[in-house]
Each structure stands twice: as C-alpha cells, then as structure tokens.
Image (cartoon, rainbow, N blue to C red; front, side):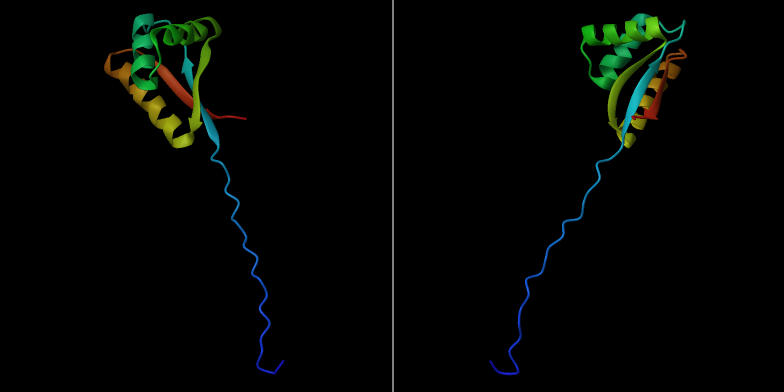
Length: 103
C-alpha cells in the first residue's frame, strides 16, 4: 500500500426516532336542556356515528354525566369538539364537548 491509499469506514446510518403524537379525548358533557335527538344528530354529523352508536354514547353521557366520544390527535380532537359545540350553540342549546389529553 502506498501513502496515498485511504481506508474507507462504513458510515452508520441513524434513523431519527419519531414520537407518536399525543392523543386527546373528545368528551361529551351531559346537560338537562339539549334534546336527545339533537345530540344524536350531532354525533352522527360530526363524528360519523351510526344511529345506534350515537344513542348509546348519548345515554352513557346522560347516565354518567360525561362520555368519551373519540380519541385522536390533538388538532383533530379540538376541531371536532369545536364543530360539535358550535352546532349546539347555533341551535340555541348548551351542548358542550371538551378535549383532554389521554393518559
């Protein structure tokens, strides 16, 4: 070997470790004024639930006071909660959806 020869070492490739986005729960809060049929209609329209699933979610919130509707990424959860709450406000009902981080 001459002095000009270079030894090549293989480069180690490192993959950046991607963290999964934190998930957030969309929660339906029960109230005594919003009609059940309207709540089911909102669940069907915003969260694409069937009539039966919407009814079960609404009844769970009615009996327990709250019900987790869906768990998803933060931006999706916040936009869906706002859209559903706004539909209630437009119709004159105190329908309320909130978001909170999943543990």
